[in-house]
Length: 232
Image 1: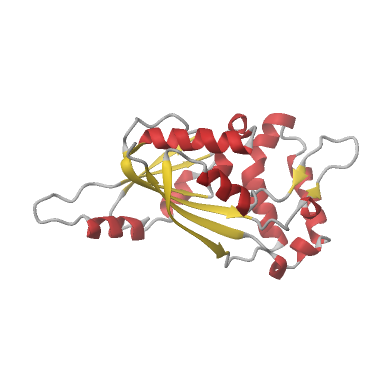
Image 2 (image 1 turned 90 degrees about the horizontal axis):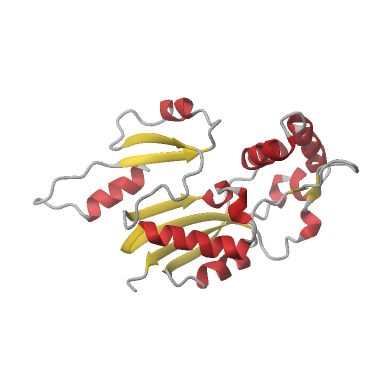
């Protein structure tokens, strides 16, 4: 955030205008420890921070934002909004478009997987007789994400790059990531009694999977997209 804010200040610096105040809203699940997050921030930061726990959908006024950044954020939206990847993509673009000023910029960092990373790479976490749930991957394929973005009537793609992730996760790292993404949804569906057991089983499955046991086999990429709000 420090880098982004400094870049914005330099771009719009003017001797005739007062430097505006910057506010950064951190959104996450209600159970997140925001105090630990805040204590890790730079003490001399040039922006003020606030916590917004829970679902942030439809909370923002229309035509409010000039710059919006979403990093891995697509996984945090409520389950009811993810019934269909395509409908989710259309609905989410519309919500973000309403919040953006004309010509506003939205930057997306979205984890994705190559097309050849198919269903055979998924891990079935429950044994027979238990609720059926598929882990991983939690990300969509990059071709699907690009197709969704290209169908937007509200935004135009200013720039897009596909980056290879430089963070190679261990099995414990994958489990921690999946738990952060899935735990609340699973708790709401099945209760919290099975959560620890579920992720213990997931860890065992990943440890014997060539795709995840060796970090060098990780094929996750990051789709970096700069979108501009249409003037129409």
